[in-house]
Amino acid sequence: MSYDVEALRAQFPILAETGRNGQPLVYLDNAASTQRPLAVLDAVDHYERHAHANVHRAVHVLSQRATEAYEAGRAQLAAFLNAPSPDEVVFTRGTTEALNLVAYAWGGMLAPGDEVVLTALEHHSNIVPWQLVAARTGAVIRVVPIHDDGSLDLDAYDRLLGPRTKIVSVGHTSNALGTVNPVAEMAARAHAVGAILVVDGAQGAPHAPIDVQALGADFFALSGHKMYGPTGIGALWGRMELLERMPPWQGGGDMIETVRFEGSTWAAPPARFEAGTPYIAGAVGIGAAARFLMDVGRDAVSAHEARLLARATAGLQSLDGVRILGTAPHKAAVLSFVVDGLHPTDVGTFLDEDGIAVRTGHHCAQPLMERLGVEATARASFGLYNTEAEVDRFLTSMAKIVRLFR
Ligand code: 7TS
Image (cartoon, rainbow, N blue to C red; front, side):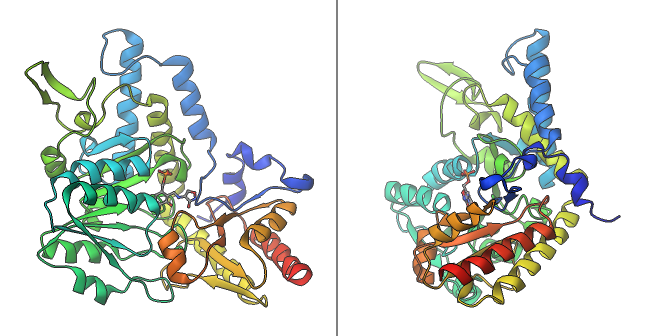
């Protein structure tokens, strides 16, 4: 079956908006946030109109509907991740909160001198939570360096691993360069020294099939809004054996078994990590997004995006004065670049004048920018609804920018 990008576009009402100067909108900022299909908009709307009440608490009909909708979202996400059980899926506000949860609660059990291994590619949300826990526990952070093409130096990774390594936390796919990391191999090596492997899956989930069991991961974090779902919702998947050993991080309603002033006991996962009334409509939305991606077919999405990336990469490479950052052999559809003599913000502004939305800046990866010797880049990131014609408009606009302003 061929990939029908026009039929997919028709399911995203926002793509009919016009860009600046009345130009058709070309949305190439998908790594920052993706747009939502009707399947997601309608599921959330239906929930709000017909099923809202608080979850897990009452016998009345709406509360039962809300609970069913919330738990169905969890089950869809479990299927999306090929998790052994929906109970291993903890809803959070997003990847940032998921990583803070695992860093605080699992990382809180670290002892002075224990080591947490990160990589030079990480987003700030997979760095700073570990710095906070290191300051609290006396644990030490070690960093896997990258090669110049933006791929990880796996020999250096091997040298960093040792008896002190307790946690390895790595991005599945770099938001700034698009590098797809060999997570399964890294997990096997981490396990060989007795460490656990945490995956920041924010950029992995939208671009490729994810199977947490095949990856051999112990925790996996993701965000709804990067996988065609709502903002404000995401998840932390964790192996049940680990979730059961992990203490809570926030206290409140729903996360307890019993409460007495002398002391309380905790509910089983996932409830233990979901204190308070959750974002129920968000859970419905992320579940619908997971279903949507599974229905479209994530292999088909990957193949489509790879074609877009190849076309955009070849086009940019043919322009004088444009340099692509991140040329690892295994990349997702994220294209970072700089133009000699032009600030990335100006590049982004000129592209916007032509109706083309890209992101400019450090992409919340300042240590990576420093390693690459740049302050910022311009970044085009592609989604399942982008077309070859859009890539060509981007390239035409870039050619004009290089000709007129450089
Ligand atoms: N990890 C990675 C790899 C990311 O790309 C992002 C967001 C996050 C974590 C944080 O996700 P959140 O949903 O909790 O905010 N990345 C980007 C980006 O590239 N541009 O804007 C946000």
